[in-house]
Length: 298
Image (cartoon, rainbow, N blue to C red):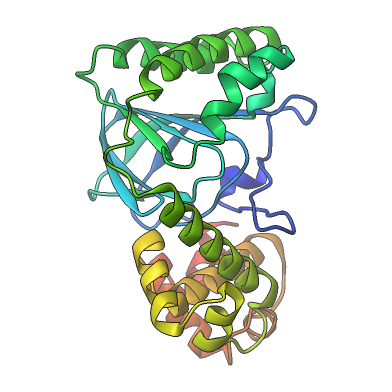
């Protein structure tokens, strides 16, 4: 099972996610997944250079993209643009099913002209971090069907994935010019807060094992503590310290699945002051004690 499928997100030195492609030689990840409140991959802010396309097969869920909560129902598809900070979240107490395709745009850069005229104008436009194809929209059925085809018929075939990706991109291009420019923040504000949050997330990635204060996190982003709180709350729905505690808890979950370390050892290497405080914090996010979680995931 690939690391990402267990909810473990691996990152580069710049803080962006390293997507675990289905084939290391071809940059695509296609998966039939599920989402339920409290699962390890819910509410985990991240970003990557790949574009992400999600089609909901059943139930309801949501994606937070650059601080905007996009509610999704069965038949909807969401395109998340390159570099946009995003995460999935459950909106009900039921399981939702979805198809996800994470694709590197270079797959369809068949020539310099195609890259410059069709691909780069979209992936570099930070004013449109996402496009929501609602089930009732005129083009939603087409992109949804292509997602079904990509998952059912194309996996393992680089040619068929590329063909489907071109067809999906054509739909996105036709929508893109008037998609959401009137509904998103200005480019200056979006880019500024995006880059500051990425810097602060990266600082936490690199220093979560140490004692970190709100002042330390804010300094990493070059902002005041007040603005630091505003940026985190707007783009992640967590305070900076809550984000840090959730991040440490995810590291605990990783070690519970992959190591035989004692609870005290895990607490020590994940930045907690003790096993009891680690257990209290962990249960807040996973609704289980670390011991219960480890037993369930053996």
